[in-house]
Structures are given as C-alpha cells and as structure tokens.
Length: 349
Figure 1 (spheres, rainbow, N blue to C red):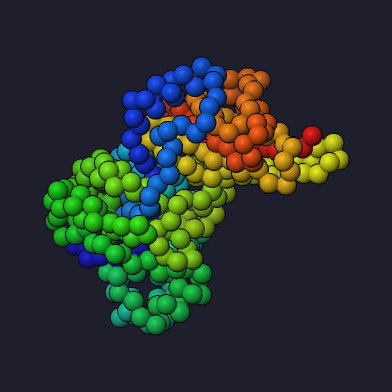
Figure 2: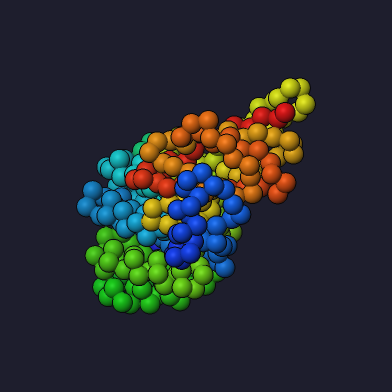
C-alpha cells in the first residue's frame, strides 16, 4: 500500500437552479440572452488529483464519475502503467483531465542515484507522450519525498513539483465519509491527494462535487507556473502541457483576414461544467468588427448564448457578430453524451 504523492488540478461545477433550467430551455429554441444565471463565477479553484493510474480496472470508472458530476482532475500516472494501458491515458485526456508524471515504477526516489531518477522521470515522459497524453509539465514525487537531486532532474525536463495540501488518506483505508470530509477542508488554490484505485474514493466523488459546489469552489487545473490550483485555461489538457488533437479542454483560435481591413482571432476557454452541459467563453482580439463561425460537433447542441448576436445557417453552425457588449461572449452546449469542443474561425468585415 502506498503513502501520499504530490499533484495539483482544478474543478468546475455548480448546480443548476430551477429558474436557470427554465431559462436554458427557452434559449434552446433559438433565443439569446445575457449570461445564464447558472454561469456565475467560481469563488475559488481547487486541485483534485488521482495517483497511481492508469489501469483497466479503475480508470474508466473514475473518469465516468468525475464527468457525471462535472469535475475535472489531474491524473498522476506511473510510466509503467501508461505504457501498459495507453488507451486509458487517451481516455483521461478525452474526458478533459490533465495528465502528470508520477515516476515509472513508484520507487523511493530520494534513495536513488541521479541517473536512476532521470530514468524514472524521462521514461514516464516518453510513455505518457507515446500514449497520446501529451508532454507532462507536472511531477508528483512518489510518497511526497523530494530532495535537491530530484528537483534538478525535474528542472531538466521542465516539470513543476506538485505536493498536496491535504491527504485524503484513501490509500490508508479511509472511509467514504472521511474522504468527503478531507475534500471539504480545501480552500482556494489548494490540492488534495487521492488515488484512482480505492473503492471508497470512487463512491465519494458525487458527494465531493456537492461539497465543493456548496462552498462555491470549482475543480481547477494545477498551474505549471505555481503548482497551485487555478481556473482551467484552454489548450492545456496535460498538466499544463499541450495535447494535439485532444477532444476536451483544447482551444481553437482561428485567424482570417477579411476585405483587407485587418484580421481577428477567436479563442475558446472553459467555463462552468455540469453533468450534461458546459459553458465556453469566446474572446475575440484584433478587431471590433468581427464575425465568428462556430462549428459544433454532432450530437452536441448550443442551447444558450450571451453577449452576442447569433444566427444559425444550420443546426450545427453558429455565426456570431457583436451586439454592443464587447468582444467577449459565450455559449452553453448540451453534450448529448460527447464532450468535444467546437471549432471557431474569425473574419473581419
């Protein structure tokens, strides 16, 4: 049985009020309005982390539970398991999680030589990248043990060391109630240590989501600059690294010149997320006279927009123009079982 390791992620989530649901239903029929009330900002972000994966036995159940409860987390993977179960690494990315490095075989690194430490770290970087998890930017040392030699190797590979603020003790047989209670102690920016294999951790996830929402906290990403939990940003699904072709949590900025009058860029970033829908924020730069075309992958549907004038050439295409509320606007998408972000392109007129 393993003791703690270090990591850092971040959460989304809030629960829709009845009035907000009614508003969303109305907007689903083509109306647009100001930002939905359920999209209120988070009062803070915390990092949920899960160590020791991936596996064919536990990973998918954890991912399903996190998604069903509107949470994202950082998965600190061991290289040996990433190499053995590459499909599960890809599943983590596709579910919108961030992937971090947790060494190759989970040894006591502070007892090893610099060459051995380098091998543990570098082989895990390679295994995760080869499995489609991108290049990790976060490192959680096994058992939370660190020293100057390890830190020098981390620096060599551009890794930020992530230690937890709170240990859930799930590795030590903590009950579901105790795991929920540990999560309730989180404050803005803090990171909690959990593992993907304890059954009590899986059972705790719905209550963790409720506990965080009651405190106005959202699950966030762990910043590769600070090692603290922050609001998720677009384009980072791998512990602060980039993952080409990821299906969740990536940004797609398009830049298209129009009529010789300049160019513009539309960039997506993550907003609130629930079990069956999520918000995306759109920021347009380069022009105040723009047209953004958003292509939504089927079967997802846009059910609300705000701060924009919206037209619908087809069921899966939104054409947006300024409506006097500036260059920042947003949409709410009904997932209908998938979580692939739309693509956007921007043109000037």
